[in-house]
Length: 294
Image (tube, one colour):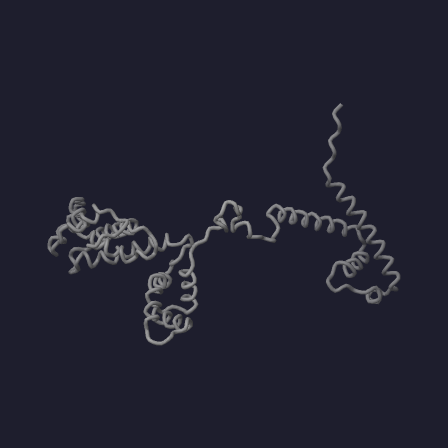
């Protein structure tokens, strides 16, 4: 077994020195663990398959994660396989455990490869772990293959949409970038961070709350002020001031059967009444000034 940097030599030696198990022997150990909880049998069964865990873990080294962590996650999958293995079936434990080891390592890679959670569905997992391999295979084929053709070929091979292939390719092509990272690795040049250049033109939360409260208050003032107008005054103010399609004095006069000058006079009087009412309502809501202490 070749040495893997980052993995303890003692672990490598123990895995290499562990004896291979015959079919009947691993069956006896699996039954002893499942039916009697024999930890010695579990240890002997898993120790004999640690070389399998290391071999599978080595295939995931190019994702940039510590090999020791990959082996540890693979061992978790090995223990899960030991707990679920059915010795009465005509299947070798190594064959059954391979799926659980790989699944455990893949889940670990998906959780830790990026701070953005990905691979939450079976199609996304298939894309994540096969996209690079399929793209490399296409690059070795004779003749130039365009990006669009490569995406289409990979999508057909994996049974996913081309859009999913393009999205996963863009994710795998870039790396996580911290918003708190300095733009220039030089203290003399200042400590500007990416966060400093993210500008949000939207109002601050306290401004939004204040604006909503003010809007509600003004709407109540206007409603109370309009209540003092007569029916004709209210109609004129609504059609002349409170609608999107404002009506002219002449048109409104024709509707009411009065002259446009009379409409103007009623409108002017109604607006004066509204201003006084609004001023009074605002004064009523102002907090009273504290009386001076003697």
